[in-house]
Amino acid sequence: MAAFTFSIAIAAAPAYASVPDGQALINYTTFAGASKTLDRNGTADILTSAGKVHQRILRLSAGGFRQSGSAWDRQMLDLTDSFESTFKVYLHHGQPGADGIAFVVQAEGPRALGGWGGGLGYRGIKRSVAVEFDTFQNTPDPSSNHLAVVLGGNPDVHHSVAEPSIPLYGRPFLARVNYDADSNELRVYVKSLRAGAKEQLALKDTVDLAGETGSSDAWVGFTAATGAALSKQDIYSWSVQGSGA
Image (cartoon, rainbow, N blue to C red):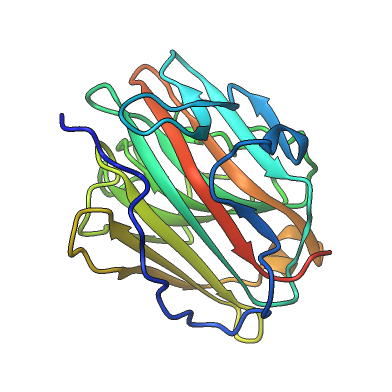
């Protein structure tokens, strides 16, 4: 497989919800120095990427059997205000790849870590809302390439589900999660990093994040897991525009 370059410049897409102006609340152009601000659990680690572009990345699972990892920024997010989070993802290693990652807001704490396999690293984190990027078809799943919104740490029940037109596994992609606190509308966009690719709205849902987590403030970050099928699950950059708690 040809190497992908992660330093591609990507034009900012218009946000759906109005988010606070000014400096990003969370901003990792790479994860250099992130060990001081990012709590990591299970198999989550910060390391240097292989290939032509060497940079510090967040690896949530290392391609081993039944792994589970989570990472939470120490800056909590105010869920009563609108926010937007953008991140570059690369899920790769074996065929088929499993199980995927989730972008999660949760009120359990910075040590929160859920189950392996189809649990995607958030199963059992009850005060949470997860946006899945799922690459393995377990019993409740429509396919091995889908997005889902999941409440209460229970990946067996999808609050909403959609299948994007781009592959989530084997090629890097950009994701953008936009939340409008006034309407409780959650929108998830994805974009291939291939030249000329356009961003697409892949999933839309209505979720009261503060109500579902039981808190106006939450930790925000990522979880991932493997089972019998394996994957290296990497985040190359991550930013959040929003209000701090």
